[in-house]
Length: 113
Image (cartoon, rainbow, N blue to C red; front, side, top):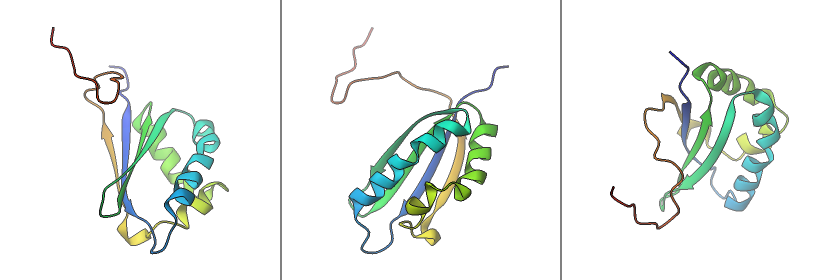
């Protein structure tokens, strides 16, 4: 059986008074370190209206996701990112991806075969 991609889902809140643009910029600045970690396939950030954030990363394997999560606090580029997060609010999950529907365009109506 081949390894299946792993979704890393991190639910979090920012520290009070944190500038959201600074948080997004800090996340973007981590991209070279994520790519160097091996197995990194992509990342998305999303936010609810009440201020909860979802940091969603896709990895080639669970082992690569776990290795990166363990190493990430030591990366120089992660400091500014982590400094903006309310540490008590963090929930981290690694999930085995079981379905993906491709790359649908935003607001596109799916066609039915």
